[in-house]
Length: 483
Length: 135
Image (cartoon, rainbow over all chains, first blue to last red; front, side, top):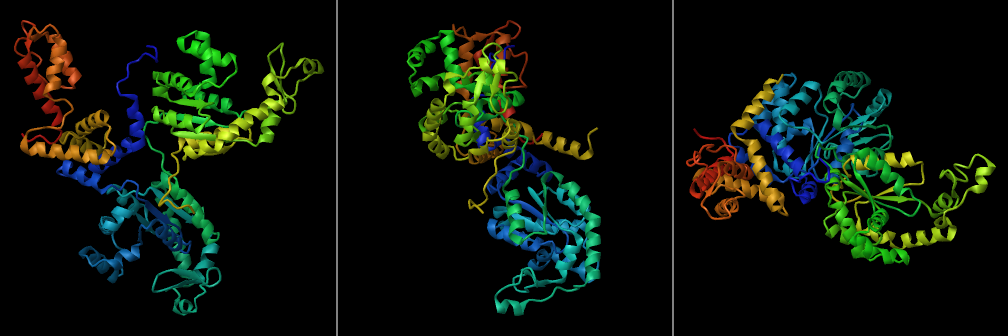
């Protein structure tokens, strides 16, 4: 059957709606929780889950070898996110519950706490109000693959796993200089991170068992288990080199924590590509359309089609085009609406270029129900636009296009017969650039989530850049504040 | 081959009709498109929970007037009857899966409005009561 005539089962607005509210992910999470917990009364359970309203809270694991700076980074992340900071130590200290008492019995006997008990401890801790509402940062746990698997079985899975990594020699040296403030549990270093406050300096103590042999043993244990743990979290892991200044490590971790996981939610691309003339909108739109099977829509093209079809709309547009006048917004919008409403655009998505050119058009497009889910600005300096366009020539006999610098005609004969397009003169290009620049900033204001791409590169490099922004979910901002 | 955990999960989902429940919630969402889907979902589930205890007033996007309206569309000349084929088609439009395939009047290919409304209501009730069925 013709794709444009297939009947629609679900109203097209629902896709936009479901995407905006993340319905798919919500369902996935709810069903996941129900399956893991298998409650006797699922209705009650679902109501409870929905009321928690905590899908966006962070769930972070920070791991790394001893002395890699887990504590410092975890503290920074927590203070920024206002989440609960959980370490195996503070779980054992904070509580007075019977589970902790049981765990302490093991410690008193100098035995390892069994995995099941650990999981219970962590589960209990994560049920507390602060973790539910503000999320959690779990540091230095799981220590073995067994523990990681046990956590997964009960449904505790981080959204982000930060692995701090540094060469062993660096770590050993760091450990030797490590000093701990017993009151706040902050970690300092004798050479790299020495506090200014003299009172604090007096307070600092050296951690127990601080000798090289003990450290080497701990590293050996760490290396024995880390690969198994990483295996469990391969999809959410980011490895960060910890042998850098604290702020650098943190800023890398922060960028990672702001990224969102890819979801399995159905995604129809609705893209708007904006940019000055000659920035490669058409090339990129064509590449995107062919790779992601969406429909490339251009207002210029639509106008020409309408006129060629001699439709009613074409008749209305003709006088404007013939006199080289601006076509009124409402005509263009209607034309566009007709096209974007068609089933191929609705089901496969679209790439729009050449529109909107003003903020008003952008607003109208949005209120007509066509909200793009990605907006790209192709940024090119004016000089390179002029260079790209003014030196462009076409061979009237073969139709081949040349560029005097990048793709010059091979023979003098061809060169002589090449002609320049009337719209490619420097004045014309400058005029078009000016009209774009006049409205660019107000459109950028309107599309807040727009992504800027440096388009002054090879077309395929630009395309890769666009692809990565299209395929990955847009980064979200925890707590609103920028770094 | 399904693992034990998978099997268990499937049994559980079937027993409590979780997937039907989500289908119904989706229908409600598509129909109403509320501004706050979560609050709306809570309301729907709460209504369902109440309906479970009272056995009445199941959350469903069709009410009696819709059922009668469908009958009216199928019977524009007000004969008071529809054919068996129309009856079946109407049930599939309503999304009712289990209904009496041969209701009274099926042999003469004339199904009265009362029969239709009764069957449709019964079927809708069944498809909206998405929780563990007490035998």
